[in-house]
Image 1 (spheres, rainbow, N blue to C red):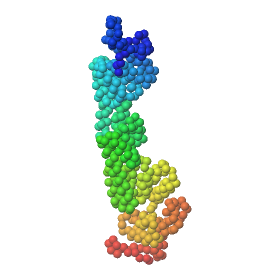
Image 2 (image 1 turned 90 degrees about the vertical axis):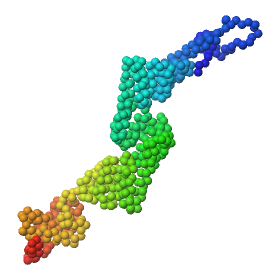
Image 3 (image 1 turned 45 degrees about the vertical axis):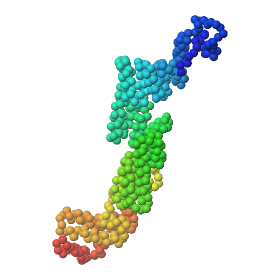
Image 4 (image 1 turned 90 degrees about the horizontal axis):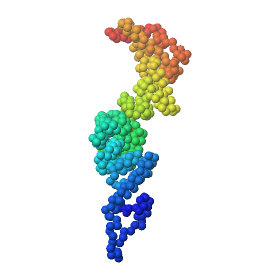
Length: 523
């Protein structure tokens, strides 16, 4: 690196280079008997002159580097500072200048090395300490940065820049501490906040970026997490942490096979990466258990499927998307097992994990329909139809709205105590039983309040029978139509209906046959 050069005859940089090629030392032995050493070049003086020439040439390179730096041509500035260092490798300022250039090129690790070399050569080199501290700060090593800024303040206590940078380093340390506590509490939003604040001063810190990306993934913000990890991998394709985060995003998006590939690659780059190892194990276990549950369901082994989905849900509570599917799958099994309330609860859990999960809304809506919770069913079907305006979803919504409308009328089937698919004969038998049960004569000895209530029920029974025993009225009623609006005769006389049914032209009466017992007879 330090090359001895003979003194240039003309003193100019160009003639010095030219003289180099033609310079030949005189032979050691000559035919001349005497040599005048007084007129020869002194070897010691020659070395001194050579060092001076090297320094002048190095200074020239430095000045050229400075000129390119001012022009913001940092690549050329780097080249000339490197030439200066090659000529004078023990000049601290040259390393300092090249460090500044490398920082402008965002090559902070190389800049850090140059800054450290500069202060090794000159421990009082303030700019060297400042640049070393800045590099440490940008790379996220706040402790090392603090030591550099404190060194400056020892040399120059009133250095305002060092004071400010020291505060930045202390802030980063505090954000790191807060992030660590928040991560343990699973407050991932706070971790993201802390890392964003820390990255304002430590913009080149991969460690902070990876932690932020991991927490974004845990929050279900997968595109953002993927973007951060991809930025790191563009700069460093072997970064095990970034590979792990890419895998984590895929894993949480239920792309388990692809996720496992990234986890394996991360472990290849960093064999001791415990998070990647755990995630890989969980991914494989989750996939296997889910597939076992699906197989049992297809085979009609609903109890086994229910248990397998339940077991899968315990593997990784952080896997939001997969767990949402597992809850919905378990709800499907629950509805098959007639565990409708449990099925509704599982659908609600699935929706809480993934609010855009249409299948969970549809499954819950059907369960609401099956349990006659029509308002809730309509609400879910409306949500589905707003998201996906298909003909099928429109029909499901209309049907739920119809059932809701029907549910707000008198339920004549419930009044008679029969199912909605009851036959004509079953409807007649039900009317006979209920009409006799609520006939006013039967309750003539009861209190006025009881008589009034039983009379009301007697009228409702007659009304229900009139509608359900008339095929046309029953059809309109079952279709949800308002019979009064259809100009149908809805003027009910419960007594006339009763007499017509029992065929009692002479009347009908109840007589006591003992305490609390009655029999009836026709007159």
